[in-house]
Amino acid sequence: MPTLLGEAAGLHLARTLESGQAFRWRWDAGSDGAKVAVGVVGRRLLQVQQDPQGLWLLSPDTEDARSLLLDYFGCRRESRGVAAIETALAEDPVLARILPRTRGLAILAQDPWEVLISFIISANNNIPKITQSIERLARAFGEPLGGGAHAFPPPARLAAARPRTLAACLLGYRAPYVRAAARMAADGDIDLAALRRMPFEAARERLLEVPGVGEKVADCMLLFGLGQTAAFPVDVWVKRAVERLYFRGRPRTPKQIQAFARARFGLLAGYAQQHLFAYARAHLRDARGSEPARQTLRRRPMAGRGPRRGT
Image (cartoon, rainbow, N blue to C red; front, side, top):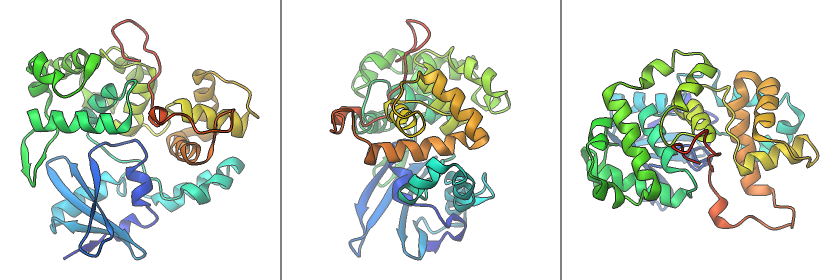
């Protein structure tokens, strides 16, 4: 029997799942023809649906699954809830104008290891290909969960992967980075759990030591994998939004934009970033009055600090 998740009031399911944070969800048609979100969270295959009454967990119908989903949607991490966060964001006059078109965006509480590899794969990539690569990795190295789904593979499995098998997952030049990051995690050279306890800048610098992690990937990892809501990843969409909405089109570097955002929004910077990203993708056109090419519809990482790091 479906379970109504009252704690998720104010959350917009589609906007959240399609916001470029996570890549393990798809839309299926339910028995009534309505869209059902099907995704893998940890070791669970979940089915979720939203209607005017709220957010429903369709399966599995267990208390453990309900608890897992509430944690995943950040309902327990952020006690104020989505609506209260948006009320605080609306004190900014620019966000107050765009929030009616972006309401309901939550920051997901994802597994840091999965986020790290997902955003290493995201370098110079687009969302359909990222999703395909991650699913191939899961099928090749992850534990079967039933229903054709697989858990995300642990570090040791990817660290021991043969280059040929990784290549079959369509990783391209990112394959050595994925394997090297997996070896660091498997050998304890990087402790993702410890990063949660580190100061923001220290955690960021540590992430930049991981092969395949550049400035943008590190910021995405901080925000989506470590819950550092002061992080403000800057891609082409966010850069465009900030320049047009706050600086009258005057160019700013990613570092200037980050400094501006952290000073203006503080610990809500990551939430502001999500709304600006969603608004820009839907409503902001380029200088010629047309939408950018399809391949730019992604969170494109910025250049790394050395030849071993991803772009």
